[in-house]
Each structure stands twice: as C-alpha cells, then as structure tokens.
Length: 145
Image 1: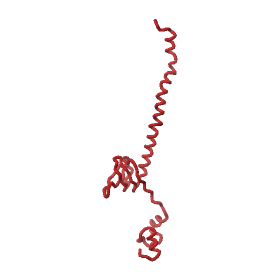
Image 2 (image 1 turned 120 degrees about the horizontal axis):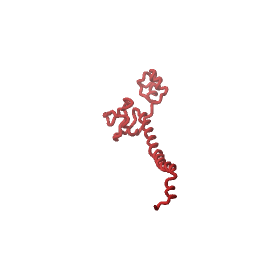
Image 3 (image 1 turned 90 degrees about the horizontal axis):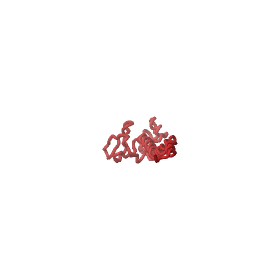
Image 4 (image 1 turned 45 degrees about the vertical axis):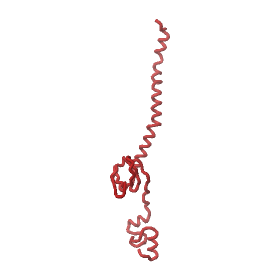
C-alpha cells in the first residue's frame, strides 16, 4: 500500500489535547459575548427597574409608545395615573415607562411642616394668610390676613 506505517501512527496520536484545543475558541467567544452583550444588558435592566421604582407624583415620563405625560398619582406597584393633556388622565403600567424626563424632589421634612401638621403655623394666626414670606410679613406688621 502507499501509506507508510509511521504516517498512520502519527495521525492517531495526541487525540486527548485536541479536544481541549477545539473547545478553547468556543469558550473565548462566550467570554467575549458575556462582557460585550450580556453584562451591559443586565446593568441596563437593573437601572430601568430602579427608575421604575422611584417614580412619584409630578414626574414627567415617556411611555414605550412615545407619549409624554406627567404622573398625577401612583396607583399601586404596577400602575400610575398620568395626565397626557389638560384634563386627560390615563392609567399606565409602570413596565411601559421608557424614561423619566424630569424628577421631582421629595418635599423636605422641615420644622414648618411639623408645625403645620400639629395645627401650628409659626405665628401667622390660623393659616389664613398666604403661604411664603409675604404672608408672614403681613401677620407681623398688622396687615389683614
């Protein structure tokens, strides 16, 4: 025959290392996919979930359909009421909110808020005076409330 015995023996040897070398490119491809595709997508999903959890009244949002609305009420964990035009309110599922355009700041718990909750409003006399510095000044200088 034309095939020498030495050549035939060399072709059959070293089969154990060839299996690991064949899997190495697949493992490298998986690692590259993980760092370029899977990990960033997981981070983005986590940020979106946090954003949905912090939606509150007064926030301006964009829905998945592109509708810009202002949140008027947080109904429950899954829904919010939003005003899309003057007097037009719709219920929106939180999961369909694509972005929050403007966030409202939570009201600070100042001592004036505590006094108002207790029925005291810092000496302005019953709360009939307009809010703000002008109302306080009228009460101090004898102006009508």
